[in-house]
Amino acid sequence: MKINPGGALALEDIVGRDTLVAEVMDILETQSLQLVAERRMGKTHVLSKLEAQQRDGWVMVKRDLEGVRSANEFVQYVMADLHPLLSKVKKFREWLAGIGSEAAGLKIGPVTLPNFAAKTWKQGLVDTLAHLGESAQTQCVVFLWDELPMMLQNLAKTAPQDAMELLDVLRSIRQENAKVRMVFTGSIGLHHVVRHLKQQGYVNAPVNDMATMEVPPLAHADAVSLALQLFQDNRIAMAEDAVAGVVAAEVDDIPFYIHHVLSKLKARHAGSAYRVTADDVRKEVADAIRSALDPWHLKHYEERTREYYTHDRTACHALLDAVASTAGSMSMQSAINRAKSVVPALDRESWLELTHLLERDYYFVRHPDSGELRYKFSIVARWWRWHRGVSVTEGGVA
Image: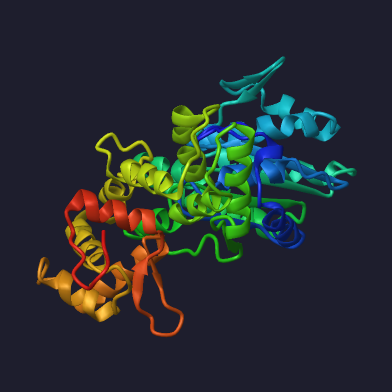
């Protein structure tokens, strides 16, 4: 296995996700779902594993929507992705020919798709998917839409009404077309997009018919196995096999960071007689967290608060600073009390909402019994303390 930090992995190199993919496929038997997770957790690789699934009568359609800027463009891509399947259906060919006189849009080989006007893209989307019913051999079409929330966020900034209507149309299609399943995933939480739209008058619950499943870090045993394989396949000698376990533990069992650590170790020691120790691993992780060059892109956790929390950003940072000030966990009330010393004017309900949003955005996790808060990922907590100068005041080290 080659070390590949941040790149697209070959299917055989995506480890520890078979059980999750099987669970997703079971859910898709009856409903659509959202795959949610923090960035760098491997959501796109899970979609790749799903795309490779071969069930009789199932068609998997994977599309990255990050660059899509309009509802019209989105519908064109849906038509493009379905064209190889629907071009065999006579009624679809006749329907497409009937609207082909509209302004030219996306071109696929010899076929030019329509460029729908602002008020007709919805009908074009509904009509396109309705033709799936005429494909007798197709039992189910699963749309694997990566970065759909980012597409909707882009759309909400320029055409919020289209974003609202697209969410509603997609929900209606899921409800009325038994052959259609949708999988949404992305690096932006869809709840933030919906929250923004509700501030502009949106009142619907566009995804309450979808299941939600989190893409977690790897199981620790799988993370250790991945690190061990990367050590062996890239000729990096270890002082002892337990060093692979240190790699996994230091980066919270997240495969993206495991690849990064091994990439550094390979550059220093591959093919040499030197045997990497646990202290070497800890130093590589600490150096990456503390580097001003931000090789692991951890500053994203601070930068995205500008987009997510807008006017409440100072209060958000005060809460994050408060919880970062302990090496363990902290009661919600204690965190709020500390944050209020920075932003005294905010009322209790606003503090509670912010705390819940930070939990939903994978900054915090709560103890299942006491409800105390701590950072979900130790590498984020360590980065936050170092770059924001937060001192640990209740024991422990930063």
